[in-house]
Amino acid sequence: MRKNILLPWNKALSYIIREIVSTADEIKKEWKIIYRENIWDPVAKWEKIPEWLKDIVKRACDEDEVYRYSPTRWLDKTLEYIISKNPKLRKKDIIFFNGIWDAISKVYKVLSFDSRIIWPNPAYPTHSSTEAAHAGSFYITYNLNPENNWNPDLQELKNKVKYNPNIVWILVVNPDNPTWKVFSKNILEKIVEIAKKYELFLIFDEIYEKLVYEEKDKIKLSDIIQDVPWLSMKWISKDMPWPGARCWRIEVYNTDKDKNFREFVDSLLLSKMVEVCSTTLPQYVLPKIYENKKYKKSLKKRIEKYKKRAQIAEDILKDSKELKVIKPKWAFYLTILFDNIDKTKKYKIENKKIDDIVKSALQNRKRFDEKFCYYMLGETWVCSVPLSWFNSTYDGFRITLLEENIEQFKYILEKVKDFAKKWNK
Image (cartoon, rainbow, N blue to C red; front, side, top):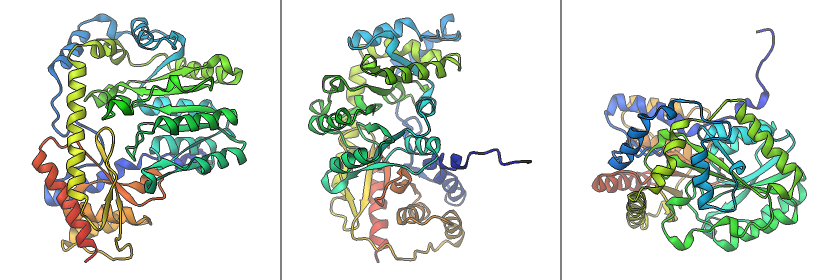
């Protein structure tokens, strides 16, 4: 080529969570089995899709309307339904997107290059890598402390905001991914106070809000946000076993409190309008699904199932000398940290072919949790995700709570536990 056509920070874009899958596929050729615990896909784990949900989608597909472009301002009946549940919203405060990348990339692309968003450590890589790539600079984070039950270091957040004038947004993922923390009302109010004091905007990623285990832990942010301009991210794909729905929406609040924020929202809307429209079918069925009398029962059943598995995981791993678990308060993942484990050990798999595959995958990878996860994959066939891939300063890994067969779920956890013990021998 006559010149380099890439921006230097395009390399910051990453969804590394899926990269371990290629290695798992190589190993599967040798062992014929892999326990895929790297990503949320309940369908792949044999969760039964409710017939009532299928029926709603089937009936919708008989309607000509679902084959058209959705209107510029999205489907009117869907907007009316959403604001009927939240009177603080207006139709113009809602924007639909086609999944996480569509929404997050547009939010960051509308920002000026020197406007930064500070986000938690650990953080979901779609957020962190997209923001860093857009800004052409390193990440700016505030710490979530596992020694304090994954609560944020509010003093660190305050200092970074105070002394870095380029920070204009605070991102809060609540419930949090990957720590599975649900922040208390007190913590959230203090973050709001920081935003208010330093005239910042807030982004709340709330895509897992319906999957919080305990009703008492569910905080209605619109009641505590005061007059701080903020936006909320929500995702129908997580509220039910339908990851392929790819239906994301953003709700914006307090646009009348700040001219710059209002202009940002207008630009965000225009960037979506240039794309013509969002996917019609998920928008069309959203009210029908949420209002179906079987939805709440189905959601409650799923929450109880994940809650039970979280308890099983804690019971199995709590006496491990090498692993540390902070039991999640929501959803279908489990983050495991290392405790008293030998990070200097050189591990070797007896099967030379598998050992070579793992060594090849680990080239240029420097973090201990990467080394551990790849060797665990080669030895136990459990495919997990290193916590460092969430731009985390902590070493650990994440697995799912999705396995429908409880005995196999226990078996996977025992394999993980035994491998950690073997690592230290």
